[in-house]
Length: 164
Image: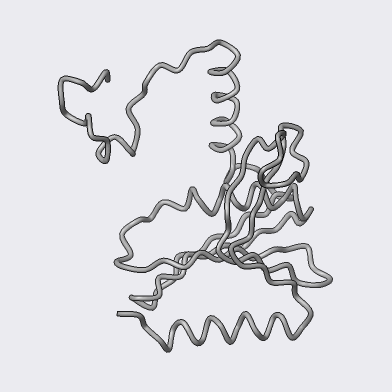
């Protein structure tokens, strides 16, 4: 079940940031267009879109905080989801430092990271490369299947119907 003390403590921290003037958004729709400019979530020019559980924009700061609530076991060490949100948040909020955390409320655990885009884009380089790969697939009309980390959940995995 949920670790109520852990969850309450996180909510207290968020409330404290709000009291200091931070804007806090929940289930926040993030969208950017191909030119990496903010756009509306369902806008015709939306290139990447996602919904962030919690986005905290402190006053008078060069940073933003992204939180994602997770239930169940802490099994996934991949921070791709929050790094994509961080990449998008940079273009939307113009804050180069992005702190992010998965909050595992059942186990009372966090997994956090920080990206400082003033220092380096290395922590989002795979996202930039993936976007280039997606663009090339569209330009060349080449959607050749590739094995990836999601294969194990595919209904065709390890069957004759799998084309990989």
